[in-house]
Length: 299
Length: 328
Image (cartoon, rainbow over all chains, first blue to last red; front, side, top):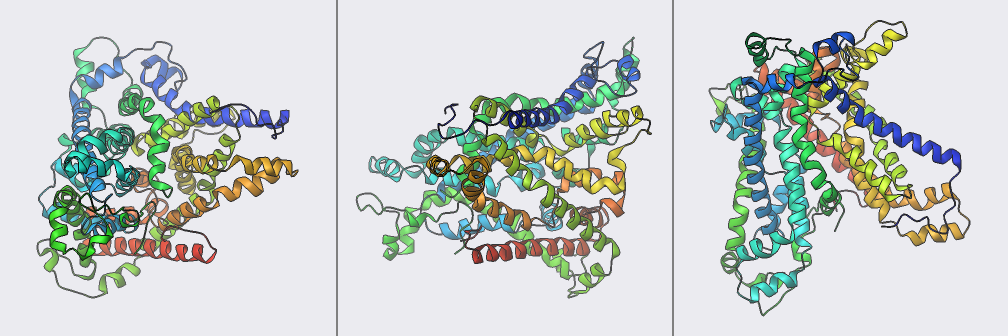
């Protein structure tokens, strides 16, 4: 990677340079500002909120009381644990099943073409909401956490990405292991998986964030008992629908001093939902291109 | 046999090798029983995935049969057949056509306004000489893709809702406080703006890769031949991303009847059914919430079939124009 202008390329004029710079700065502001606004509001005190008429540009007395309130027992704290559990177990299960299927179908095996076609057709014709719901109901999985994991455990896109990556591992490498007496399972665990750490990390991120942590619809569909709700569904109820947060009542009665404003509590919930993503994001970001492309552009 | 994106068939490249247990077309003569014994470990590895596909993808496809039944939950799939009666009832519902109309309008708005956005951003990023600036901007603009719809809607309420920056600006110029997300006539535009905010950055990945893979000697040759900046863009850069653009366009067309389900489900109630109902939310509200299972399943089935037909049709058109398309 070099940052040197090739000899044949003319220098852009001042107007174009300025135009590009302004466009980039605007884009970055439009993306970043909502996050800053949410964080600022979550740290705001009641005075900050009333002073701005509900709008907080910068909290003059930043404090963490909103966060203390939501983690002081209550529905939000509970739902965070539910989401963490589902995301951890779901991601492990998904990556395992996807890798097993992708490896099996990355080599010419008996019936491999039919299974591959079965998996790929789901991309073109995904099952409808109603029939999926009826199957989950028939299996007796309603109101169980299993319903948040098993029906979405395999994602066809992630499967395609992983299979394409496995297929690009040189056959000679696998054949030489086989000559040395390695079984298919040994080849998978000792050679294929160690070579695929980066792409597995990206697949794990896609599953963890998109399929599990961020999903609210699965839970809305399958969990009628709101004591079992994951974070996204709780966030929807308290932040978007404005229901009062249970924990805040406890706070205002047990603690002297000013309770945090509703706006701050709501935005604190939003921050809690975003923070885990912000933590893993920088580590995995450099692999995105590899992860997306090994499947999408024909290999 | 159909080959999807990246779905190269394994047999094409297998290398027969008689020294090791061969996995190659050459041993087709060997009975399937022998192949079964040879592949048993691999088939066991595939088993959980296959079971998943059967139970949670293919059984539900069969479950679509209730669209042709007078479905009663306690009878289940043994309910009486009524032919196309459910569809007749569905087509007579103005709510259904309203949902179809809203869906198509939102889809077209997104096609017109969202679809070109990643291409333009990718061209802008690709034109930067400094890789460090490009990387920094990339890591920022990819982020919204990983934020859930619940949180995105919360962010938009924060910026455009009743007590937001936008509302305060309106008041500052002498207007009334306004909740831009609660205005029915603006709903479809807002849905499009949200998708642009969330997905434009992430959408650039695939175009940037295509742009980076363009042979730089083509640019050099064009420049030597006297092509200026814009002619190089037109004759070298754009041809380099045509194939991938068409592929993504076909896939996009296939989802024309399924606009962001979670996104709209979260915000439909703010503007009401007339402005906010789309096909997916129609299926949810009439089926799961309203108990009209057969009607809702029928609407879902129509959505799936139309999507499939559009992809196949668009793919055909792409082939006619000599483009590779999605399916080989």
